[in-house]
Length: 259
Image 1 (cartoon, rainbow, N blue to C red):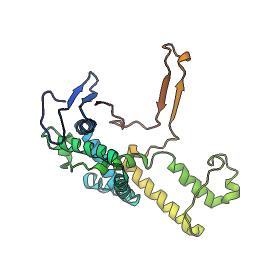
Image 2 (cartoon, helix red, strand yellow):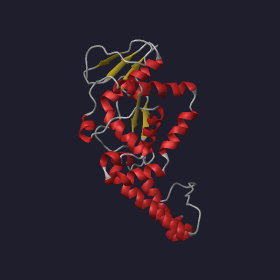
Image 3 (cartoon, rainbow, N blue to C red):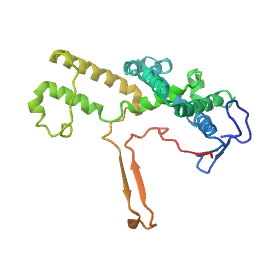
């Protein structure tokens, strides 16, 4: 945290960032673009190394920092084409949405050029942070979700289907809900089985490095309670996102305010 004023490039008017008693940042600005800029600045201040890890995990360069043990994870990320897909997403965005990502990236880069302290991991690893580009934010989202869910179960089901055939598979209790189609790669059974086995082996090697971004969860849930059943008389809306615990957590709270 810091007190005082700092002059940076990229904002259209003064932006105020204050911290409450919990350390949560509150960003006040006179334009929406400056609010996104402020968010990027504060995100870099609070979570820059986590952003570095996620970005490198997405584009397949984490082994440059972590060494040979991370090669399997980098290979998987590149095989999944996370970078090209993130760049394609940015290119397809509307002008308004793209400007949000641009402003956020400018805020991150403003922090990098501010002379304020970087995360200590940079000094420990001898790493220099590269400028943040708009598509990096999409890549981070993708790597955080591409393996989230039940991919382990899907691979197991594909292997079982190949081994016992569709008739026996249809009688299993643990199969996907009725009406769900189980897809297998095209080709002869032997080639398909080899492909699935190789893919499962690559994933097993990669998850040892990717850690929290490969959460095996059955899904999230959300629910609401009518105000008549609450002591305050107001409705309650809750969400339970099924994620494994990691430090720092993937969630990061911030308050943005603009006209």
